[in-house]
Length: 118
Image (tube, rainbow, N blue to C red):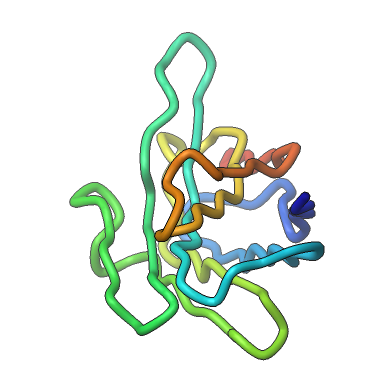
């Protein structure tokens, strides 16, 4: 079993920055993808950014140039640096991990609230 715990959410003014962290523990396979998703009220959950164990990275078009995902494989951790935040970035942000060898093995964190408001 794998557990994910996010931290770093909060309230920030438009134009500000936040850094989210996610730590994974348990039986983690080496070949995996870690990602950040978000879900705003009344909307579907959407992919924000993903990074594989070997560095392949993808960012959603809506955050490209403002957000950056990074990983520390030794710590089984993933981070999301969020700059130039906008009110539309307000959402619950979820950490996600998928085993690339057995794709049905996927795990979610409980989520952390990010609110962008003046």
